[in-house]
Length: 291
Image (cartoon, one colour):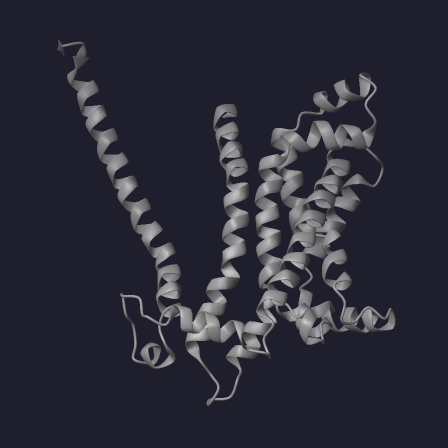
């Protein structure tokens, strides 16, 4: 029976759809609260003093935010601003080199049909399975022999070789980069690097934005290799400074400063995500349209 243009079945389907949508929103809201709760606790504890933090959890902010910030900035043993600049330099350089050269390598494997194409692809995947800790000792000895210790070069330049990012870009190209576009650019007289930079890269923007965020966060949080390479106080990155602050003796240890420094350290990551999030949203929308 049809009444007012809608059948009973249509009304039932709409009701089921509304229930599913409501449940989805509730689940997403719960997951959002869970994800943001740790950040909330971080901000709250950054505004509390060390004795207040030792008393336990509090949902209300304290009154020591400025005190913790001033104490942290006035600490001569912890050059926080210099550490932020060092981390920005290393993380930004790693993000740029990782995304560009991984996309370039993936483009070479995807667009060119040469003899050892599959062998090169599987070789890169084999490298991806080697843990960083296995090669750390040899890497440090090599950098020492090349007189590159206490330098940012060993932290930035090796990021050109990023097998995980390469694999992601290769898989993305298979679904989003038709070779007909590359062939058309070649017919129009475009060179290979010009084709990649001005034809291929605009198509890869969503994938490169995602990998740039991951590469930036990974380099920003990296403690193991920088701690082995960097020695002077003015070249240390934020994770090393946070570890130094956390490992201070009991009389000088201040949890308020630790939380304040961690809060400061996550701000650049949030800014990078906000700047690149529009490319991620555009990529999701593009994928849904293609689907």
